[in-house]
Image (cartoon, rainbow over all chains, first blue to last red; front, side, top):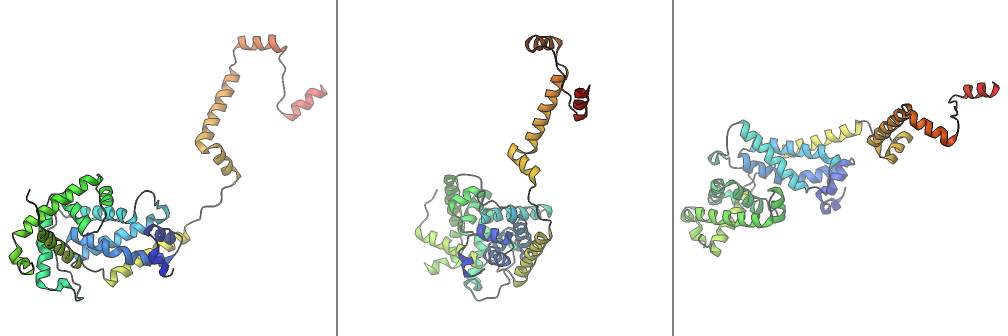
Length: 193
Length: 118
């Protein structure tokens, strides 16, 4: 498979993998793993566990490839559900929710905006505020603003309609702003604006 | 509910961006493990018995709608045999009146020759 693999859809690549094309698996791994890993990390708050879930979710993708029906779901939507279920199972078995204070800072040492203490504090404050939201609002906001999903796709994932999704996101964002507003000075927002 | 300002929206959007950046990057080791799994699944698929082309019987079954239809046909056939076997006397009398005497048609070839010779 060549550079043209970049232009193929996830479903096309999955079909190619099913036909024995290993490079299709490589492209899918590079394309999907960061998103899967990010979702698992946000749900579990632990890098090692998030990696295990990401590996398991991708293994399930490889196994379902021969039977994949592109008419039934998007690959990313299917993967989101698989990761959510795997994380929920782990949280349930260990009898814990996500303890926001226990979330590790990512080990990645590449220079980035998140390297600054203030940026880390802001990200942590948002995580904390998200955890305080009602579950449906938190899920809709996360899917829209962290997973970058479209509203119709969120509606499909959450088994509801687009208007409800819009409402959940709007209410969720208002609550987040209200929670962050009380910490503007602490998080350095007043200096920025 | 209090309306949000553009500054509040900007603050929130920046926080989302920072949180996305804070997502851990998958390690090289994880990517390798995922590809090893892919290789394993590919190898399993390659060694799994392939589905052979359907034979004539299977094609015929396909044409008539598969085993469910076939079993329906079989049931109807059995029912037909049974109805034939217990044909009521009144019906036999009626057919005799209509078509004349009952004739027997041997089913086996040897019976046919025996009948002709006799």
